[in-house]
Length: 597
Image (cartoon, rainbow, N blue to C red):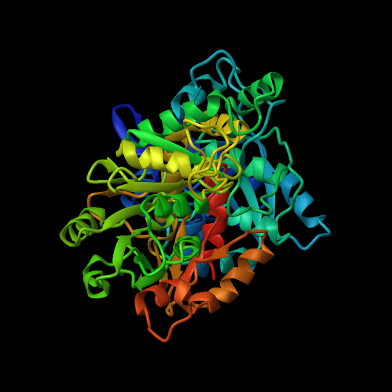
């Protein structure tokens, strides 16, 4: 059996000289000496050192001593992570079981106990873990998930600050060569946070956590704590979206129940309308039963009717087109632009006719469209703009929130939206007359002056006070929710940016994408088809959903006209889990499956 010691990447200062952390002195002896001697006690004499600089390691052994072991070196000027490092030296490992040791682990005894457990393991596991966590009492050593190596080395033998009864981190692994097949070459990959979760889901990692008393890991702990959490609660059934109710939702909803204000009257409706319109940057808000009602109400308030045409993108949720049809008007479809996936402004004017009354641009998946250019076109042709902002709560274009540009904007608060009321929607406007018209039509067209007298055929598009109460509680933390969406997207981007055949979601100049749904394109260069990837992810408990189908290929609106960009995005588009509750460990797990196909 061979051993791999990961002795690179982390630097500390020792006697004013920077050296790899395992090369510091410990109680008069060199750190590696402890590790090598302990390995020899377990009859492991062939050791591979993964180091930052071969020159530094040669300096370390300048007296010619190798402590009686056969030492090999692998130089890593650019750290590859634990998994990347062992993949790089796979040719040196052969087909035998090997031991991997973090270079900053201190242990005086051999690995006989661990090796015996591995030999007696009846399951066909690829990896056997030893797991331990340094509990440092009354010290500053454990801070923000990091352990100060120098502090522990200094106090380990002197002050005995380590409580070996509280071991929860990891550092020594016995690994079968099959693990290497799950790691790609020349990539920075974490064994603990990326490879192990994948192997665990495949039942290739021992599930039993072994606390050991013969070592202390004095490196960083966060990734290993994360994997410990994963083993205790394996990642399964990751949904595309989840409702996140951790604020005042229950308190406000209880208030509605306790006061009997549960229908379409009550203080929460007015507060929600006022505070949401203020958040977006509009003067008036009109709450509705859902986002589709908001679109229908907006069109009706502008007197869009039979014989009129409304320009909309081909690639959007079908509600945009349905709302036009509800008014007996005709939706006229325009293709998307490749850069943003949104309505292509360059193709709008060719669709304008004398019957065109309005344009409904959609901020698809939370990415703003080129709304300034679309507004210019609308002004030139005297057209209304109704922004479909159902998916773009808090998105920005030119430092101004989407939904504040058009004559009316429409939002959805369905359960998967950034803020939710379960169902629900809202129309926003800066025009008081339009606002009053929408409120009138929303309530059956009832006269303000004469109750139960109806001057027009209106609608029952009212939101309940209970929905508004939930919405208000959600709105109180909207910036936190948006930040989490963006943070998750950045972590996805970091993981997937170099994966051949995967195109990341669009980001466009002068805009802030809020990544309502993290949607990628699976290109032809990817090793398997989009459908095969969906099945692969499903087998690992990961839910996905396809990108929207172009409205123009579905039966109610099918046309012989082709919309090549929209059709390509739809064909290749795949939405990955995008929940506010999504953790970085879950994102690592999802991305690791994609990267290792």
